[in-house]
Length: 361
Image (cartoon, rainbow, N blue to C red; front, top):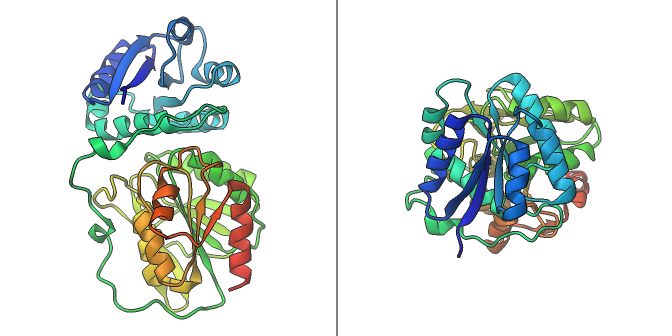
């Protein structure tokens, strides 16, 4: 398998150098070149097409969002945006995801090189995920991330307490648990926008850096009939409300009497992620059983596959997004291979399946 060729576009020489160093350490990635602005990048692309572009937002001569839109309209290439951790930066990155970016790398305003070095595993994984992404009709590269993953990988047992017994019998309320990664921000928007204001309570894990989930939730809340917010430890799961796990925190579904709430905690990376879909799904299997609906959506890797299987075994109705509508078919594919999905659905049918399952409860 040829290495993934990456073009780094950033006006900061130190960021270009730091990213190039991080990416070059992975044997499956090759830094094809660097560019200081979109004009230079456009010239470079005329000579050779990269598999993935990392793109800064604020640059001279042309900003990253404008370049991204032009690129998606003329020559779709998977793009990973690179921007600061500020609130304004988060809002801009939401525009980038709307315009077609497949993922995000966040950088602080100071200590960038050290931060990027510390985040090297995630950065390399994001680039590999982007190489698989289906953008603008482009055929994704086939790539087996497992070949280059470290052998040790924590499971959700690292976060979950020992089971105390079977989940309660069916009650009148259902809770839907959704998990997604690469391509999930826009896919989740489509699902949530299709739900009515009285939809069952929903809890979501989207692989996303810290400080970004608040802007994501705020944007969804402005677009949807359901109420959407970033989850806080102890938040109740209510009909017509959606809770999104905060970046860099795990979220678990808990039960108190006949009511559900979320527990938001720090902890180790699970399946290489924090938040982890497996942590949410496996907690739902224990706490909600047949009162739950599990949905696994677009994303790379296998996070959520085991958890969805446990949800199905506990009596939950489980759904996997189909290949044709997935930006990256990794996570749904793994869940389907485990027999975890009762239903395989295109993206535009997932909201309908959630409502149907909740009404037949």
